[in-house]
Amino acid sequence: MSEAADGVWLVVGLGNPGPAYAGHRHNIGHLVADELASRMGSPFRSHKTGRADVVEGRLSLGGPRVVLARGRGYMNESGGPVKALATFYKVAPDHVIAIHDELDIAFGTLRIKLGGGDNGHNGLKSMRSSLGTGDFYRVRAGIGRPPGRQDVADFVLSNYSTTERKELPFQVSDAADAVESIITDGLEKTQQRFNS
Image 1 (cartoon, rainbow, N blue to C red):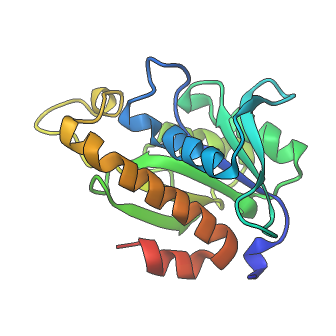
Image 2 (image 1 turned 120 degrees about the horizontal axis):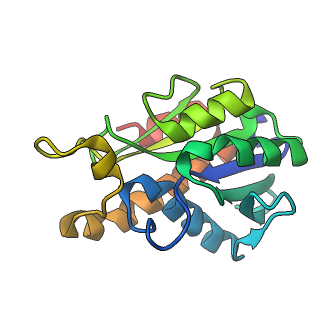
């Protein structure tokens, strides 16, 4: 077990709530959170704060406690629920992992990092503002850039293509593996494994 395995971890799948957004590229964080919840063998339940749905448990036998969360508000309001949960569970930013879509990375590719800017991502911008720092982990799931002249906002709020939908389960599974790896193996080993 590395030092990273100490204490409670808060893992946040960024996205927008409700079925209308479920299949959108912007919602890959929710898809990965669903995969992790399934691995933990528990459904999401409403948290006392009323601002998020959570699953509490462990991702591995003897591993640290993990609070898996999906905010109930929209992407650009992600920070409030994250801050409320971090305060409630006494989780420092260096034990927070955000899973989100990333335009500057090709679809099907992952990048793992600690800290950095928000790169125009409203969910990250909101988290950085509410937590008072950008020094949290990011599992960045590539969605690529919009084709032609399609508007970025329209692109991230659109469904995956038929071809992408066939590949999506692999990306979601890899992203979930990356979250587990950050918690058990630390950043460096995780980056070596997933930052292709």
